[in-house]
Length: 270
Image (tube, rainbow, N blue to C red; front, side):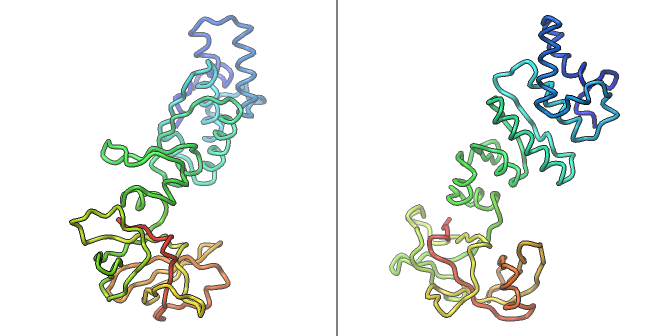
């Protein structure tokens, strides 16, 4: 993959190409090319050919060329999809740095939710050509406007239940009643609802917990370094995902029954 670089041109000539097409004076072109290569930290590679560079370096050359003629807006359509995770994160950092230094508006298209949260000032989340929600990454993660947004941004657990308006609670299939949840957005004629809770908001039940408990059985554990992902099955067969810190992992094991709690403010009803 050459990121549309001209393989027969040097790095400097690739960056200069859009300026020469616009017939800018040679001195201006040379100065701009030097500035752009310094910006992407490739000023020592001006005479190299694209084939002599890594994928990440080629991507930075393409970025320098796109910025060379001071565009008012830069469209980036999944530019890092072909790179491995480590290199992708490095280039993400570079793009953020360049954005901070130049102030150019970047419209960045991605299907990677983590990349969207890491790169953006504001996110527009689309579904089937329709905008579901616009806001900061924190807005979409902490206050999703729909079940689609809640399921797409971040990891989520969904529990189906029924709204009991008389008791102002949501009753789960095993009879557990969840109270104190915000249900003002539920339609008046709708009783079937879904409760969303993030894996990092669930807690193992402790002596001081007074919130309703979700009962389940541990099905498996996956060690992921900073935390352990615990797969749990509720009493009625619904899957739940829980994140535990290393010092909490000793409290669970496959086949063990557990009680989970969550603050009502950390649950969303759809």
